[in-house]
Length: 240
Image 1: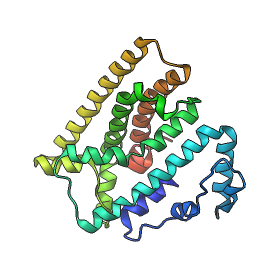
Image 2: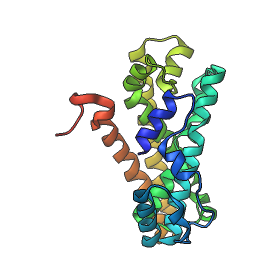
Image 3: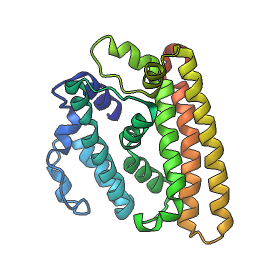
Image 4: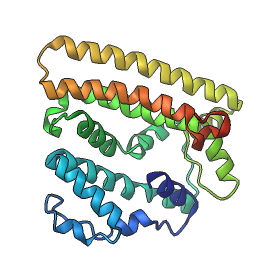
C-alpha cells in the first residue's frame, strides 16, 4: 500500500490516494479501539487494531510515524508545481532526511525489536540514527533510480540523489551512481564505528541495545531488499 501511494503521489498533481482516504479521519487517540472503527477500509482497521493490541505504546508510535510519512509525501506536489531543482547534493540530503520517513522507520524497528525507547532517551543514539537515515535514503535512491528515470518520462517527479549529483556536477550517470555507492560504503563504516563506540559506554538499557541492533540489521536488510525486489530491478533482480 505504501509503494502504491508513493507511485501515485509522484505521478499525480491531485495527490489523493486510498491511503489519504484512510487517514482523513485519523483519530487523535490511537489507543481507543472504538476510535479505529471510523476507518472506511476494514482491512486497515483490522491491521491497526492488531498493531495496537500487540503493543499499545510502540504500536501507536508506529502508526503515527506512518501518518507523518504520508503527510510529507505531499511535498512532492509542491516540488512539481514550482519546478524546484536541488542545487547540490548537500541541499538534497537535508530534504531527503525528512523524505525517508525516519519516524515511520524507527516506529517499525522499535515495534519489531520490542525496543521501548522514548524519544527523550534516544539522545545517545542520535548520531547513529542520523547515519541510518542518510543510509536508508541513499540506498533507496541508488537502487530505485532506473525505475524513477523510466517513470519520469511518463510524468512522474524525479527526486533522487543520483540525478542531483549527475546534474549538479555535470558527470556521467555511471560516475554519479559510483559516487553514491561509495557514500553508502562510507556511511556503513561510520555506522559500525558509532555502534561500537556506543556499546563501549556500557550504559545502554536493554531496550536501547535492541534499538541499536535493529538499526544495523534494518540497514543491511534494506540493501538486500532493494537489490532483489522486482519493483526496482525487474525480472533480472527478482527472487523466484
